[in-house]
Image (cartoon, rainbow, N blue to C red):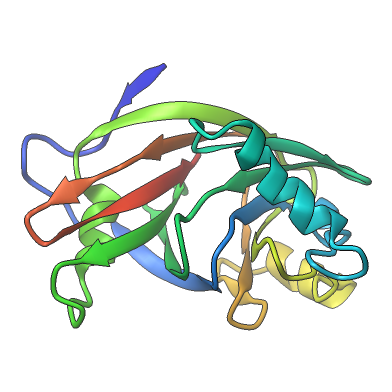
Length: 198
């Protein structure tokens, strides 16, 4: 399903603020209810969780993201297309936008925010049930063991992102089913991949 993006024409309204970053050295990110993400083990042990995330894209090379089953529930995987940093922005309406940017100028510090709001067509790629009120985003190679009760409690009582080192973060969200859309925004200053969570 095509979903019109925010903005009109080439105008970009600055309605989003950056709340955190997730670094990855390649491979997908996982997006999940924090209660489920805490059982994610990434490459630990036999690496079954990370293997499952990468295997999803091996089996479905044309998709941008989708759900996989974990022991404690379902997680959403989203491909960043190589190593780099994804920036998370929050809109005035409470929606989140995850952006992986490729700027023409490597010193460009505003390309992420521009791509977060750049008008383009978005495609619905899934839904995610949130029961804890806290959304976790992790590089799939990492473990979710850092999501302890203390961080979960703080997530529920703040409007701020809680960083999980350089490769993950948690943010408060409504306890409901969230929709996820993907877009590939482009502009003169660069291009990127975008995941909207709302």
